[in-house]
Image (cartoon, rainbow, N blue to C red; front, top):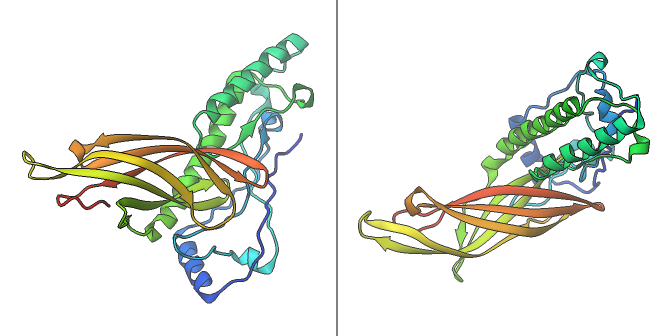
Length: 276
């Protein structure tokens, strides 16, 4: 049975005492879990997991790129394998070429549906002639969903560990307000800044300032590996005008691999019109 492995590519660089201190602080917050090795689900061999880059780099806002202990020693560890238990007897092996064609088309639709969520996880179905293990589409879908849920669980854990270091929103003299957040891709965290121009106005009924409009929404990665291309932005006014929820989609490019990512960030307006 073939195994899907993710290859890590680590950037080797110099380190400073400040970087080591910040890294130590993050590592104290984030517990690393080691998984036991189990047999791969047969259809894992049928799914090409094309990951963006397997750096575990924390690019903090306003600070230099952090370097992990592994990067300091110059040794790149192997990425953790995606292990999904599966009973081979539960799958139905197609015995005709016609069945294989039908299954293959459904595999493609399943993966395309997952990719529409733009999680930052890049999945693809290899050419049909490369597939050796076949299972019913329902089982294939369960396997794919399990991989995505595992990825999202890791994303929540990692972002929770680093988000406490985010700086507050800043309104510049030109009227633009910038707020930072983090994006997670397979084994890499990248800082990103969202900038927009907000208008507020006084509401007599509520005796406070409220948002009235937002314009010129843009995004920019903080210094580090990879490039970002914003493709969509959509703002929604919430909480009676106190909050703007901004949904953003974009493409992250690194090492000739492109990952689609969607995220949401919120800006708030206090009673005096200050944005945070």
